[in-house]
Image 1 (tube, rainbow, N blue to C red):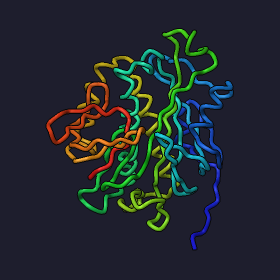
Image 2: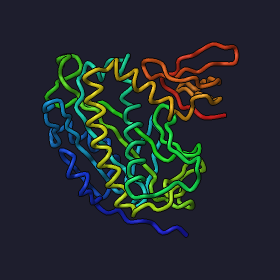
Image 3: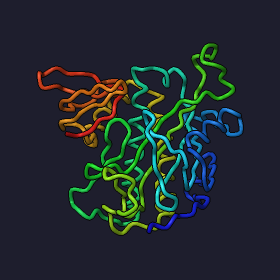
Length: 301
């Protein structure tokens, strides 16, 4: 019988030292939903940009009772084993709503997460159990290890009260992007929610305690979001090209035969060639035709 784990308020001293504000609760429906609610009602505010440095606010919970993924999927997490965090950052509305570049915001969240996990592993002198064990991103929003899902990302746009409604808001005003990041850090094999999921501790030896891992990763994510998003805001087109090159090394789907499942129930099968300039996926079907995939679940064949 599996023993139910009790939720406790996350202790995040390292994250608190670098973030502009941290909200930590033992349990909530969704950290993204809590962040959006607090931003919407004005109880959580993000400072203006200071000298080009972005404010980053963190909302953390030990247990989510209604965790969400893309396209209505559920995210199952367990207290004391899974990190569930949301990072809120102010972004110029013009960038957040520009479809030629805003797809890279999700890719940035993935790259920030890989940097944070790999940096934590290196800091503690931990080591992969196998030489070919490395972390990748499954377009558009999953962290993968050995073809299994270790984490998921969900970015959502929130209109702060001072920005007004979509119809009358100043195009130069800021909006807030909330990046939700769920990571299986210390789940044992018997606690994995699906056969397609995995946990960091199953692939890496010498890791610290869950609490230390969660805090060290979150600290790095705050710093990563601040640095990468500041660069992106300053030069979206230039950064998009740099990110496209960077993604070649960590894009799990690239070069694989995959099947894209669309929300209307249709599917498309082909080889994932890479990413377009707007961060959409290029899928080449058997007849040699390249298709652009912008919203779909992608699985390997």
